[in-house]
Image 1 (spheres, one colour):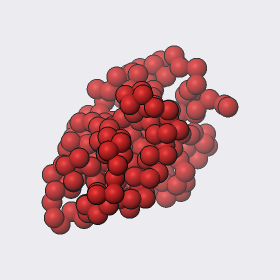
Image 2: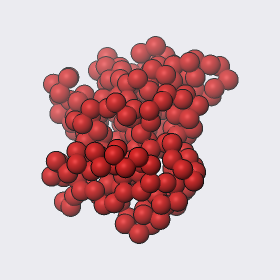
Image 3: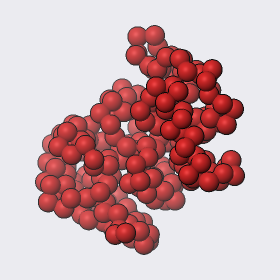
Image 4: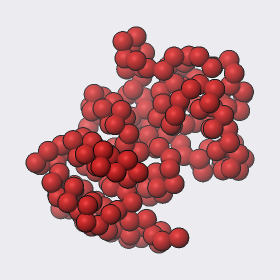
Length: 214
């Protein structure tokens, strides 16, 4: 399997340089390029075809949210990880709706950043625990359109454990390690959870867990 190609999009040169050095330490990841504004992101993605885009939300020309919308509209398969220094709830919810694969605050550890890149490349959605908690008010708002509680009674004790861990922002590998089961077993449980609570991805499952106080 080839390396995961990552495009780093941030308007601060020092941050880009730091991310490049950090990611270079992992043998499974290569930095395909870097971009300093929204227009450059779109151009570099078109030319370099990265697997994952690390996208700062505060960039010149147009915002990271607008860039993410265009990227995912042009290529729904591309993996976008949003990086932010603030905790604007409205912006985070907007990113969830358009299908961004990862949501990280810029104080994320190196290990968590690398594991998130690998997880989203493998098809998972990763939400920083602090961001998950910020969504609590929205899903408890009756006009927010958050997930209903149907299917809760159908979840087994193990499935309830797993959906709680999903809501904490843990990926399949971390869940498997915590519960002393295989990643394949975790994936099977998650498929069952999605079917029972009628959701399609980890973000929706995390919101469901918060909504139902799991």
